[in-house]
Image 1 (spheres, rainbow, N blue to C red):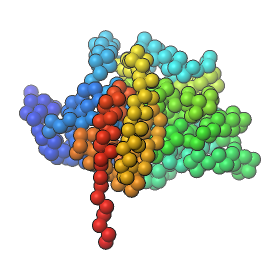
Image 2 (spheres, rainbow, N blue to C red):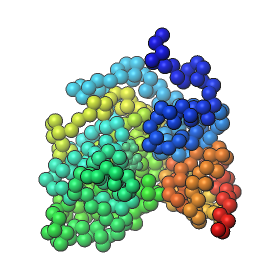
Image 3 (cartoon, rainbow, N blue to C red):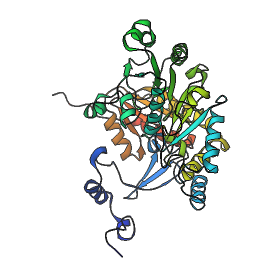
Length: 422
Ligand SMILES: *Cc1c(COP(=O)(O)O)cnc(C)c1O
């Protein structure tokens, strides 16, 4: 057999230590993510195992992705069956799983007549498509919020706020303005006569109902309702990025569907990815109503893989299990266990817990999130230092109350020594 195509991962590689794998990683994989915290070889339910045989309770789920945990039998069977039947066709053709998933998403979204779905392979591509839709309004002014994360491709990056992500890649597509987070006066001013006279009418406002990457920050109550009124009055699109918050993560199919979050609004566009495929890469754009659904006409957008039958089967299976097993309700109750047990323990390092359902952040009283995440890993928990003073928890939606208590026990006792005064 040719040695050019290696059999890494099999045979002699199987027993490599984590350190040896990490060494190979650093020689072969681009350094954009830094060194991996562990090299993982296996998962089952809410647990993963590393190359050294250590087990971890996965409270991050691939960053809010593995809704059904790892190696879920229904998802595995659905993907395998579809791959063994019809794995890929081009978008010159339709497939039953693609059509079925589009119809299911429209039903879950309670989308009005004329609504349509566009499938992608990732979150950033979903936002890229949404960005192209905003240009088709004939306007170019797009509003986003400070702290926003919408992805890393050039269009989505223009919507993302973080300077360190943007600056090396400028010039980015023009027309995006970032408004102070949750500031209703700034939002009204952006639609006001002076701003319009100076910079033109608004094409779209793009927002996350809860900012995930910014540390699980919820918009103030009433913000989305105001956003809906202002966009509607001016003929602008309201685009909700539910890539992280959607598909059951916060206890409803879409976060905006909770009255306290969305106040009963109907958006023009919702973007999805992360949890949608249960770990299989897929994203989607839902366009609500005829106007939004026809912004991208024939030939104006495309993708080779988007909506491929295997990804669509993964989406259908994931949504099917969430529905069948009552996981939306479980997300609410288990999320509450996680929150209340962590808060009740009264660890002086913990200031509180914010977020919704199973998208939570443990607020710390000191900026030691990186050390807390490292201590968690040592203790057998995967968490994420999402901000200097916040730990993000986005576990699989199948997390049990007992597993939530196991996680809470870590936060009850974790201690990080104070730096000695210089
Ligand atoms: C993760 C994320 C994205 C980008 O998704 P990718 O699949 O990583 O491209 C966009 N928006 C939000 C809110 C996200 O959480």
